[in-house]
Amino acid sequence: MKRFITGLLDLLFPPICVGCNHKLVQGETLICTICFSSFPETNAHTLVDNAITNHFLGKTTITYGFALYKLRKQSHLERVLFAMKYKNQPKIGEMLGWHYGNILHQAPIMETIDGIVAIPLHPKRFKERGYNQSDFFAKGLSAALNLPLHTKCVERIRYTPSQTTKNKIERMANLAGAFKVIQPALLADKHLLLVDDILTTGATLTACTDALLTAGIAKVSVATIAVVEA
Picture (cartoon, rainbow, N blue to C red):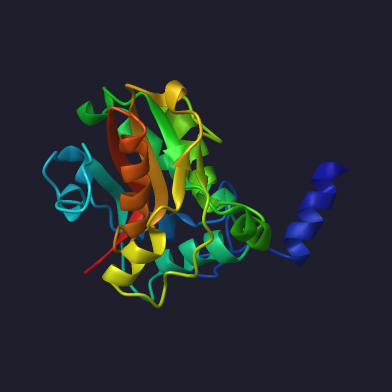
């Protein structure tokens, strides 16, 4: 009966790809195979010296930096990430985290990573949105990489206005002192992978990295689902 009802619902309301709006076929979830295979990968994890790592030079001290995809405007990937962040589709983040984790599993740069931390949302922003998409991305990575996910160890203690209309300098000023490490003893002397959804200017990751390093965390590397293509 359950299978019949599911089939009937699929017939009446067929699931569609969040990227291209085409009907999903059996075995596909949220994103169709064609969209998935078209997303441009950075392969940054194969190089210690790469554009993502170099993006943070002069801003903060990270050990490694990498992103799964290059984000282009008005692309199917942009639609997917918009749905993940603003249309109550956080499971997309978990799915992409699992996918990326399986890619990173064999990368030598992952051998020294001790755990994963997601960029937190301020409680007010969390209440507005209902979820933190970066938490879901971190959850997928944690499961695929078999690494501990450290939740509630870092808090966003200052509510900051949206970053979308601000330039680089304004974003950095907007985030000064926004993060606090709640359990520094738990994370001390570890090499943490700090994750977020999209790398734009890097202001959020920079501010959170600074807070972690100041609290005594030995090393911080960063990973995102996508980096905005220049």
